Image (cartoon, rainbow, N blue to C red; front, side, top):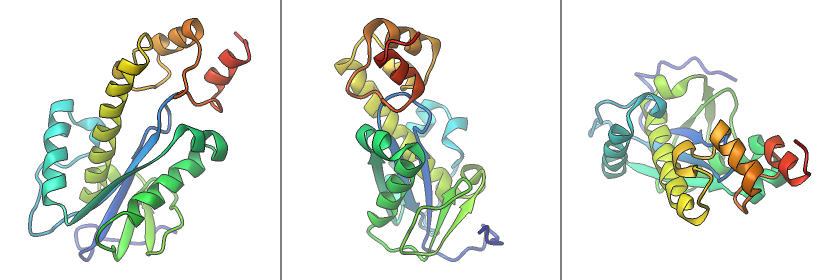
Length: 200
């Protein structure tokens, strides 16, 4: 149910929730929940995809320092393969909200559906460009996942993971066919499944 909310007047203790990593062929889906502090505004919050990497990194530190509460959570590759990507994403969002040190009065979820939560929630389509707390969550989730993919590049060289972050780019698809799937590849995703089954 979409609630008629004026996002500028929403009461305090609103958590913004967003995810990163639904589309990649490898690695976890990462979510974040953030409750901003109205007394400590953060300038320049926007959808993480619209910000430069340097800007995201700077805002990441500022959000962690100034937010009333924040939590980064995830669902692992095994959970994605077992549950499917949508249910794994909902589980990761649930973990992020439950991990907040302050209980929000309302959780605003980027997208068109909400996970099962113990607090009231509402979905907000394109929320990361409308709701500052969701924008903050998108930044925490993206920076956190990007850093992890950079680290995984060293563990699994040859796939270009640090560059494409696991998304199905031509470079990634070619490497997958040439080198095979790694333990961090999502076996339920068609391009990975096809490689494992020897289908071109």
